[in-house]
Length: 97
Picture 1 (tube, rainbow, N blue to C red):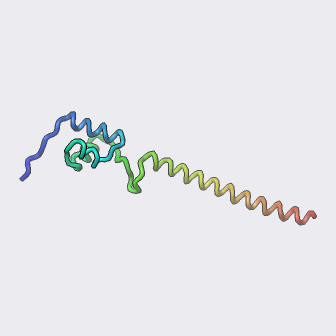
Picture 2 (picture 1 turned 90 degrees about the vertical axis):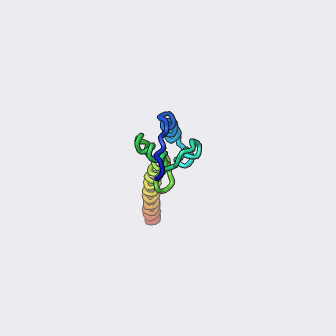
Picture 3 (picture 1 turned 180 degrees about the vertical axis):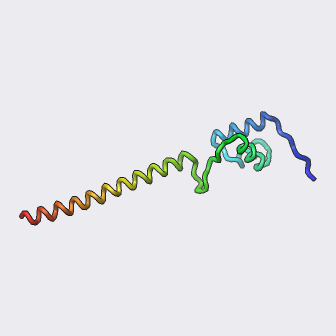
């Protein structure tokens, strides 16, 4: 059976600091020479959310994507309304002449 390794508090703090700065667990594990599972455990224990979601996007990118989709939907609605308005006024101007 393998003996459980103990890491210093400073090493754990450094790993968490790098994770908060945007580095991924694999990168931090390579830099510090510890297993990736240990870095993930430290991240969970420190309450740091994973950088990327299931789509591979960061939290900021996910938020921006939601905002852009909402804006895109509003622009489509406006465009549809304007198309209908143009058609309406084109019909009324044809009947007036």
